[in-house]
Image 1: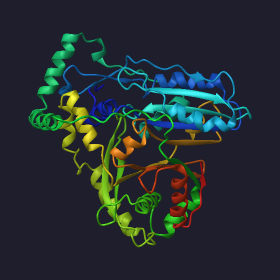
Image 2: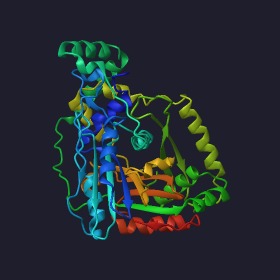
Image 3: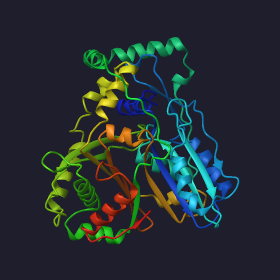
Image 4: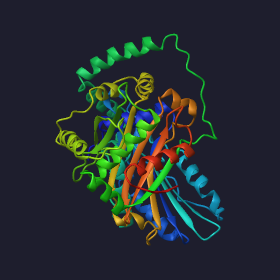
Length: 434
C-alpha cells in the first residue's frame, strides 16, 4: 500500500493548517423518529475500520511529502444526553460543522447524534476533506453501513526516526526540478513578506457563511435540463453561473468564471482526493440559457480531457509541496484570494445505503462542504468572497447546497435565498429552501 500522500492530498493537508481551519465534508441525516444509538455505534466502529481509518503524519523533510498513518486518534460517538428544542436543531448542526478536526494525527472525523423534544432526531458526520473527497466520503459511509471492514496498514508506522528520515531524503531528492523551482519561489515569497504586517484577525462567533439547501423533485430537475438540451450537471452549472452573474461575481467582460471538480477515481484507488478540475466561462448577461447544448458540448470536451489524463496536475502543486512549511502558508494565502471564480460540484445519485446509518432509512440527508477557515466577514472579503454550489440526488430528490458571500450584493442568508429562488425560477423550477 502506498504510504506517501499524493501531491494534491499533501497540499490539501498543509493548506488547511495554513489557513487556520479544516475544509470538511458534512453529512446530516434527519429522522422523524429516535435514532438507534446501538446501531449507530456499530456504524461508528465500521467507519474506523474503513477508508476513514487513517490520518496524516508530517514528513521530517517537507519536500518529501507527508505520509499516511493508521495510528490515528478517533473521536468517540457523541450522542446528546437529553433532547434539544426542535428550533435549535440548525444551531446544533452548525456547531457540529465547527467541531475541531485534526488531519495530522486525528481525530480527522466526528460522528454525533441528537434527539429533539418533538420526537425527531439527527445525526452528523464531519470529515476532513484531506482524508476523503466527496466520492470517497460517500463510499466510506455506504461501506460502513454494509459493515465492510478492512484494516489499513502502512509499513512506515513501524519505522524508527532514522529510517523515516532516510526515506524523506530519498523522496525529496527525487523531486529534482521542483526543488529548484521551489527554492526560487521561496526567495520571492520571503522577500514579499518583508515589511508586511499581518492583519489582526479572529473568528467571529456570530458569523455564519450564508448557506441555503434547496430541494427539488428529481423528475422536475431532469425535465428542465432535458427540455433545454442539457444534462443534470449542465443545468447545475447554468444555475451557478446565473447566481454568480446576479451578484456580480464575474470577470471584466461580465462572464461567470466556472470551476468544476472532476473525479478521476479508478477501482481500488487509494487516493483520498482523486480529483482533477475543469474551468471555463459562461456568459449569462442576456439572461437564462434557453439552449444548454453548446455548454454541454464544451463541458464534455473538457471533461474528456481531464479524465483521460490530457490535463496535467497544475505545475505549481509539486513546487508547493517542496516549499518550507512557513512559506507554504504565505503561498496558500496568496492563491486563496479570488473574487471571480465560482465552483460547481455534482456528486450524482447517492447509494441508497447511505440513508441507513442506523439500520433504517433516514427521512432525508443533507450533504455539503464546510470551510471552517471562512469564519468572519473580514476573512471572506480578504479572499474575494465565495460561491460554491454542490448537488446530489437521493430518494427521488435533487438537493443543492449554495454557499455564497460576495459583498456588497450578497452578505446574508436572506439575500442568498432570494437570489436562489429567482435564479431557479428562470429555469422553470421552484424549491423548498432550508
